[in-house]
Every structure is written in structure tokens, then in C-alpha cells.
Length: 190
Image 1 (cartoon, rainbow, N blue to C red):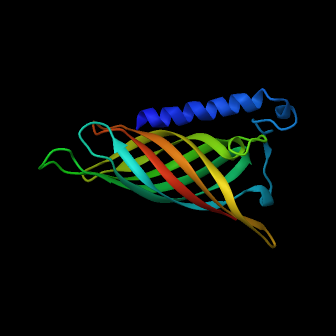
Image 2: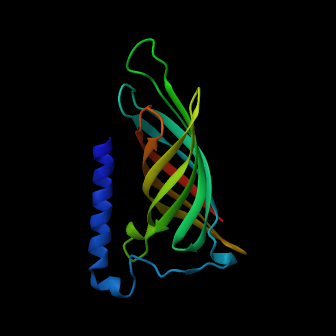
């Protein structure tokens, strides 16, 4: 699973690199201009995620699901929070399952440009408590993903619905297993 995540990361970096060196990149950079955000540009959103969590060591892959919210305090940066739950059965009989609840505070950098996949992509990091049965630990994770818009509504404000994919590698401060998460996402943007 880690090999698949690294393949996705390399492919995204190649797309970013190819787009940055194209003639179109002169007028539409992959790296958007940094600027303050006003009320109508905050881009608040709520999301639901579902996918798989693959811990290292003696556990099977298991399901992961969660909810979150975010906004854009400064272009092109996002900030937010995600709450997820995962459960992975042990490969050995008589050993408990690995069940985790994470509360991650996250930040991300959103790319721009004219390439439709790259301009909806982001990279970031998150940190926060990882709650297991007996104790609470600290977890950190790099994040890579994309959100493709599928529907927009216009009224007083523009709202949108997007679907995407997000990959994370959770590193926990305990001696329990770290692991890879690959989740589908659905976001509603206000």
C-alpha cells in the first residue's frame, strides 16, 4: 500500500513539474500568488471520507471513515480539522484489533494552473491526538490529495460539491503500528 501511495505522489509531482515548464504556465502558475482572503474567498467546506487503513506489522487492512471541515484563511493555504475512526483486525488469533480515533488539525497548500488535475490538488500535513483503547498518543501525517468539482450552485453565494481522493501516512508516538490511509472524499463548499 505504501508503494501505491508513493507512486501517486511521484505521478502528481511529475504533473506539477510538466505543467510548471509548459508555455501555459507563464500565464497560469501551478503555484498561486499568495494573498489575503476576504469574506467571499474563505471557501469553507465540510467533508465525509471513507476508505481503507493499512497498518504496518501484524494487522490486516481495515476500514476508515471520518468527517471534517476546513476553510482558506490565506490563498493558497487551507486549514481545518478531521475526525476519523479506523479498525484493523490482528493477523493472529487471540490478539485485539487495532482501533483508533484521530482528531487531526490540518493545513494544506493548494496548487493552481491550467491542468485540471493539478489545479484541484493539494499537499499538507496534520497533527493531533490518536485515541486507542488504553491511551492517547500524538500522531502526525503528511497528506496528498485532490478534489474534483462535480456540481455548482449559484445564488447569493456560489456553492459546490466535489469528490476526490486523499492519501496519508500516520506516524504515532506509541509502539503501535503506523499506517497508510487511502480515502475517497466528498466535500460541500459553501
